[in-house]
Length: 182
Image (cartoon, rainbow, N blue to C red; front, side, top):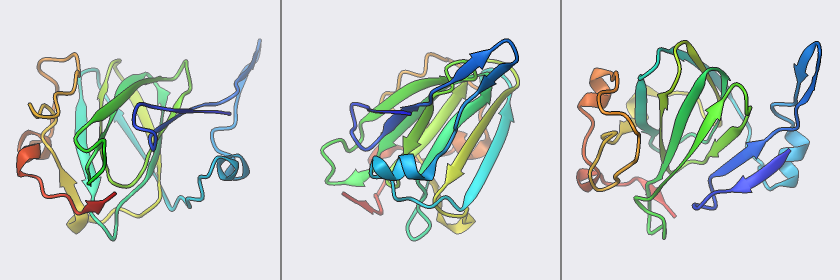
């Protein structure tokens, strides 16, 4: 596995080693010892999966402490543009974002630690998105920021995404009070 730092060093792209032949392919999607070698001492306690049609945008979501989640995300079928936004007070990257295209072909994974808002837009129909979480879901702790916030200015490359009511009505970043410390 190759661990690649993004422009926000706490967010990582993980490239697995894929073995392909005429039968198909095989790769390790997670190996605790290899992650420990890279300083990841997180324990995953919940796995989630979603299926979406092309043009669905989910995010920007996070959970507040004490239920804040780190997420290891990947695409099992299809493709997404995946985005992480730093929402940690006093971080030199506060309000900045990084993104990566995750596909069933490149098999990349994306590590999004606690203190980041997370979202993705599907680039293909029937995209299956999978993620491991370091904390269980807690409805009272969920938070969101408007996906197309002008201060964050994410380049989603989509004009009219399919959104949930929660995502349509999410607050602006300028009105956001971060519960996370850097």
